[in-house]
Image (tube, rainbow, N blue to C red; front, side, top):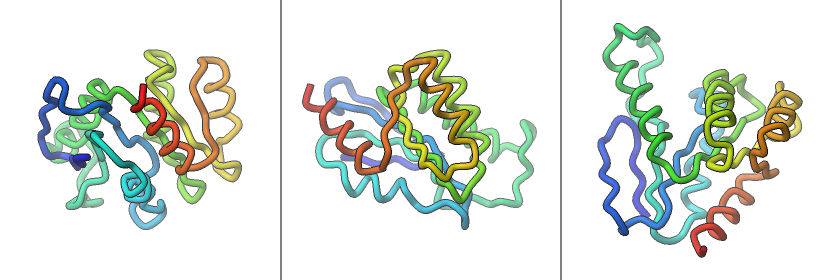
Length: 157
């Protein structure tokens, strides 16, 4: 397994990685648990994991198209989601995660079979997430461990 964090470049060699996974979901530093590390520790095998949780994120950056660091981050994430075979989404109940909601809407309409969503009961917009997933046929699971199990099963196919 190889983990690439934003904004590092990556190359997806044909045949080298059986599954390319993007880790969409709650990141809000200080509020969200580091679920990305938990998921990565549970995966075994030839995955290329694209993780947007940047080591050197600076919350003082202006979130504007004119800010080069912010623009680099967003473009990295958009390109990584395009390239991924599977996009995992985790909605941490301690966060609002508006960008994850935006990404869910984008991908549910674009390619719902590419998504696997974990949205705990206590997430503030759980009802919205459930209705959208049901309407578009997005796979939902109840825990990060179930995401790991699902990824292990599809890798074997």
